[in-house]
Image (tube, rainbow, N blue to C red):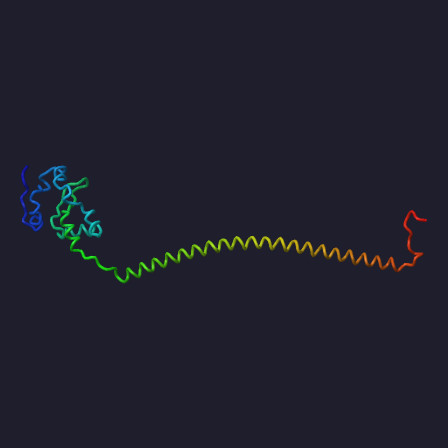
Length: 187
């Protein structure tokens, strides 16, 4: 196998400390993978570890911001890999920022929204229970109204019967004794 001519670009000078690794074109993928085992990681993993999107990591590697990054053959063409030491160096330089005032307010608002959603769910449950109770009470009220109407009608009928009976009694008492009819079977 012949070696490809070495460029004197900044990427090659960055790869110089990794001189023990063969160039990507000089080995088979399995031999390259064995040489890189544990020493490099793919761009999606770099993005995850650094907390950036894969697109941002891709732009950074193309801009030369990841020292020692190089391409290796992969199942869907060449893929970028970055030395673990570079990622660790970038992570050590990254200073964790204190949460911004906006993010603190957003979290507080999200907590309040969650609390209000719980209150709303409770209120809806209570409203449903009250609607069922109201419906039951309305049914009972309809039954009571019907019973009251029946009692009123029965009372009116009793009053009419009593009035007729009293009138008949007065007429019967107003007759003289000889005008009164004798019961059948007497005398």
